[in-house]
Image (cartoon, rainbow, N blue to C red):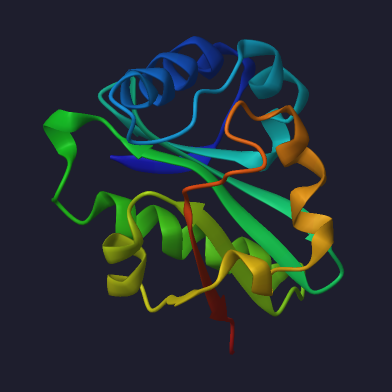
Length: 152
C-alpha cells in the first residue's frame, strides 16, 4: 500500500469511490470536472495498482485548510488507512505552514479519533462557505464541522 499525490489516471476511481458513498448519503457527491480542476489538492491510497482511498486538502486562507472528499473503499475500511491518510494531509498542511485544518463531515466520530474537535458550523469563517452556494443542501448544511490546530 502506498499513499501518493493523485494523477490524471486516478480520477475515474476517485469519482466512483466518492459517489458510491454519496449515493448512500454518507458524503457529498463530486463531479469529474471538480476532480480534474482540483487534482493537485488530492492524495490517494493505492494497493496493488488500485485506488482504495482518496482525500483532498483544499487551501482556503493563509491560516486554514480543509480536508475534503475523504473516503476509503469499503473492503479496506476500519483498518487505520483513513487515519493514515488524514495524517498525510495534515503533514502537507504543516509543510505549507498552515496552522489550522478542518472538515465538514457526516462522520465526526472518525475525525474525533484523529484529534479534531467538533465546532458549530457558524464558527467557521465566511470564506469557507463560498463554494457551498452550489451545493444542493445550501443553506441548510447538515454536515458537522470539525477542526484541529496543527502543532510541530
